[in-house]
Length: 417
Ligand code: UD1
Image 1 (spheres, rainbow, N blue to C red):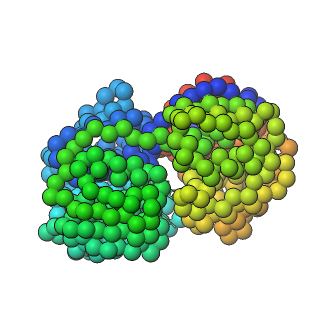
Image 2: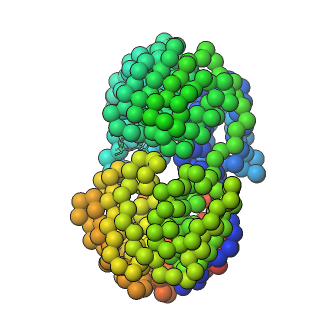
């Protein structure tokens, strides 16, 4: 079951509900480590990365119950080892999120270095520097980060670069540190805010989340709580592109519209009509071919790198030429070669792609190389003539809940085999 075949040419039309956000639930699950007693996490998406994080927590000794409504109950009082092994971390980089919480609550952690990643080098030096600034003694030995300390101490931490999981690791750790921590140049992504809300619900004292200065007054202990995860803005953006690329229309309920300004703006520029209510978004392309849109990825609130590949697919069939500049990850154009195999005309030079829109893409066998690349190939397959088979589709299950069920519900013809 590692490939899907899409019969292209159907118009995407209908209504779906957004799932919980992958990039919010992963740090929240890691943050259950700093709370005493049970946490009940609701609106958890059924994703491979969530399973991996659950397995990691279970390996540490936490007790987990997953119910059929996708709620998870976790008790981390039973954690009796602080090692995140290579086998787990290599399959999911976000396992690094266990480092801060483990050292904050248990005074030690041994977490494998994530190592190379398909979309670029992605170092974790800023996670390490931040924890060192809070007093953790850190050594890197045999591919593992070994962290120790009595109790972390609050400090002023200046992040040299805006890093999402780096900010999250330090934020979680600071909630149990002695005294005040100030994270400067913090990531302001909505998922960092969602994590802060969960930590606050556990009793943490945090101000400034959603700005580049986050203040944390450390507490002696936090108490597990019930929390519902925010919607997935990247899933929402991807389904909006699915409607736009097929000239169709879609309503997505449970949307977080305020977090999607940059994506909505580019879809409107591409010719879509977008209307919103408090918690839903409707896109209507009125059967039009997209107008090409230039994109430059950057940290929030600018255009998200996690939507770049999907807009490559949209621009591939647009009426004219566009440029996409990727400023976050140096190797994030691996979908381009595959899109070109479907008849797209895209040239990459350094961190820029020049896309000359073609009238039609044609179905072809293609191979997914990472999570968002796999989404862009599925989108291209929807718009293409004939059949597209996307191989190595397992990447998509890391970040999209029930993607083929949702797309089939919207009129697509997709079969997994
Ligand atoms: C998170 C998201 C990912 C998204 C990315 C950028 C999660 C689980 N993943 O990844 O989906 O694409 O944000 O929005 O939330 N960097 C360093 N040193 C560090 C850490 C990062 O140099 O210690 C660099 C990275 O190489 C990259 C940039 O900072 O160039 C941003 O990366 P970062 O925000 O850390 O991405 P992730 O948190 O890994």
